Image (spheres, rainbow, N blue to C red):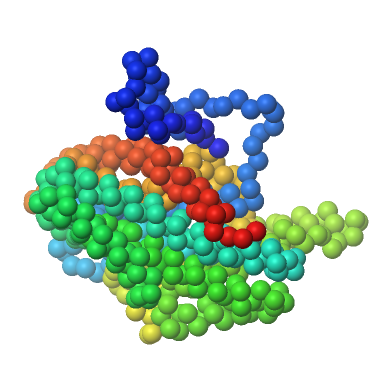
Length: 485
């Protein structure tokens, strides 16, 4: 874990009443607060044993990478027309002279995952289904029904606080930035976007009107009884539409867990599989990855807890052959999942490699571009569970684990920064797209993007320590106050 220095917030709030001798201490605490955690010195512990990661740590790494890619996706909105896939027959106006090779390469399957947002949302939902089901399923399998009831009531109680409270803070930051006119001065840039225009926070004449508008939008944001897909989407930050969806799907998953808690393993897996198929038939794609994540969690628990049944004589040979065959199978599944995750957001019916797949999407499925990426998200989580090189090395690599730690702050903070600092320093899309002009434009875009990404990571790091972690701790304290033990 990265060090989190103790900060006296009372000292920060009452700085004007401090004697001169405490000013240095105050400045030191502010410095530690603003300094990224990975640059702060590590605390020396008494034991020399290295910190061991939990068995589900690889999911944190996957979540962190997905959040980072979502930031890249939203950074390219309205600047590069990369929504279509490689080879799509879109006409000459979609591929200006001199840009066919570059943009064609970026639209290739797997390559386009480096900046594609919708597949990452499906990965978020599968990971959530797995993470929210891991402990309950272990208790179900051990027949610990009393502990299961305690765990479920705790999860239901804390879920809303965990998801919504940090978003209240991030949207408060948005209205403060709006009142500083940082959204006002970037309105022109936001309005000139050619491809995907995002809603830009409107700057009210005074703070009171801005605050009352924030209250109204927060009421919309927490409308958890509206089951339309984008219910809860707010103008302050459209990227947060997944948070109400995540909450609703979490509640549906918890209800499903209670339903299957006393079933046998086989019947429980069959029931969750049936719910997944049923969700597809009723066009509830957002529920399906949660149920699929629960299935993967149980299969993973079974695999990790099942001892080898081979005799000592044949154990070594059988283990090697089975491991080799398993690695080949799940490696192929992993690459197949990357191909499915690369399904284009638009013009898939005209994209080589995806034309046939498009015909197999159920007619009842309205979000066509999410069908195959959702299946790809399920397969990539399943294959990552089985491939040790991914589970224990790639996704547990320290920088990727760090992205996992700041994944939620990264998601909620990137919108305000892109719409203010980003729109201030990003280059405008040129009207005349000649090779020379576009090369300079791409270079300028790359420089601005590096600055923006560094600021986003820094802001997420500070938000984690200042807002996110205290929100988690607050939920636990309130739970202890309200619940009878």
